[in-house]
Amino acid sequence: MDSREISDSGLRHLRKLRKLRSLDVFSGRITDAGCTHIASIKSLEALELCGGGVGDLGCTLLSGLENLTSLNLSQNERITNRGASALSALKALKALNLSNTRVDTSGNLRLPASLQSLALYGCSGIEDDTGMSLLQMNLPRLKCLRLNQHSNQDGVMFGMSNAESQMDTSNSSQGFAPAARFHAGEVAYAGEGTDSEDDAMEANDEDDSDYSEHD
Image: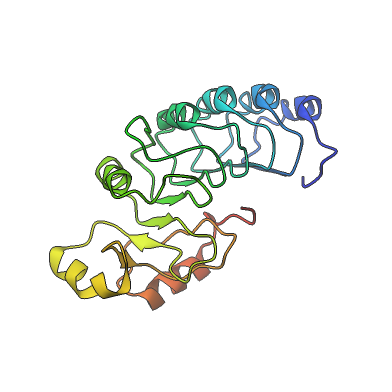
């Protein structure tokens, strides 16, 4: 539902959709009040609320959607580390987009340990070395991290052996090996078990369930 005409009150009509698995509201006038209605749809597995007025309270409300595996809250500039950390309750979450929010990689940021894909471009203070180390330490399953919307290396892979890391250091300014090159505007997700860039691209072509059409 991509329309500025959609507001919080309109989402109230979705509460009866008890089997709804995926919801995309892009550029709607959605705030924390609208998240109250969405939070009642416990069947949701994929949710996109981009370009609205969702803040920390909204994140707290959404943290009760225990079946979520993919969440895109990009372009909600009221979200801070406090709200993002509330999302750590989403134990099944694999893909998260918090781009163009007020989230940073300071020590008080807590994200779901289950994450495999994370987008944080457009956020200030993200590329700090200490912050990157914290991300790597606290997100052991993370395979793809997007820090630059227009970079040729949209993803960087974690969890590599020392030998693999040394081989690929020349390809990454931060010492992490580059994953597949993804199209700008997508939540990059590198399929588990791939051994090369071509394999990663092939895996994503076969299953794009974790991709997002919006930034």
